[in-house]
Length: 387
View 1 (cartoon, rainbow, N blue to C red):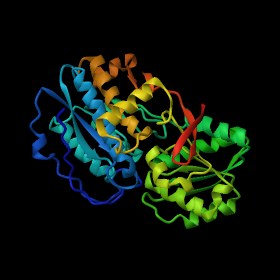
View 2: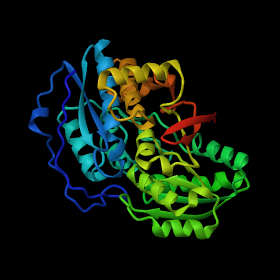
View 3: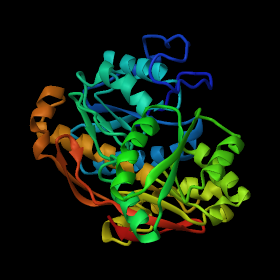
View 4: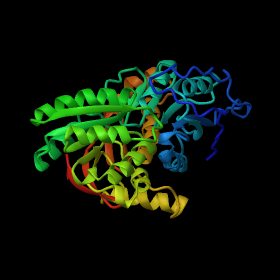
């Protein structure tokens, strides 16, 4: 496998409200010179994953899982007889910068497809610029409603993930008052709208909401509002290290003795970062957990450990999604027997692939999947139900 990992130098500014809000200039329209030499023997794939900011905590796991998938695909003969070649782009940069960098790579033919985990603000900036030109496999859980031609989605949406999780916890634990804490951008805001309806179905209600910028360190005022609301459950819609810091502050405040927490974005890296004293009463809903005991998952763990060693970043749902992103992108191109995005879209309904979650199929450009509810037990997730 030939891997190209060139990143454009960028500041640690964050555009949290969507595309074009950072006030920073776009990067140069041309990618680094070493990417211009693209031969017909390779298919370039832009891997857009966070290497900075709150989501950077699981970026290394995402990158390694994608590399593992590329190596497997190439050992099996590649795609259309050509080797895959990853080009890593920092999806933790401001959305307009990410979109401009990927668009430049597409424009010079350095990449023929895009995949990876990145927040919805990045997807919203990126999709209009490249999805009509190359296939774009988005692997992050998201708020739903993405219908851009050329975009294919592998992960969870609130209707299949959050709705049954809230229903199960509300019913079994008798929860009645939910407080929402989220980052201030499109995914938490739109998911919260859905959560209000889900709570009402279970004869519960949302008793408060608080939204904080990406990169928040101090949750004192938010925790005070949770305490004053008399909530018995908190829906966490926080990204990466923001969720880690919230978990720690939540435990220090003693609220973990009164409130259950539910997160739809909490992988094993974030659990480890939170620490054993900050995970009591914490639940997560997802399509994958590293602790799932299936033949496919055990094989995946073995492949990952043999390739990267026991000290590699922990496997979790977010890294695993990038492994699947490569597999789905490969399957889409193979099914169409073409790199043309229109041909790929026309044949996408017949696409399936096998990964750590077993055999999965596309339906209306979204992957059908099982969803699980897990409870944190120290630094591991114990899967307690299939939803």
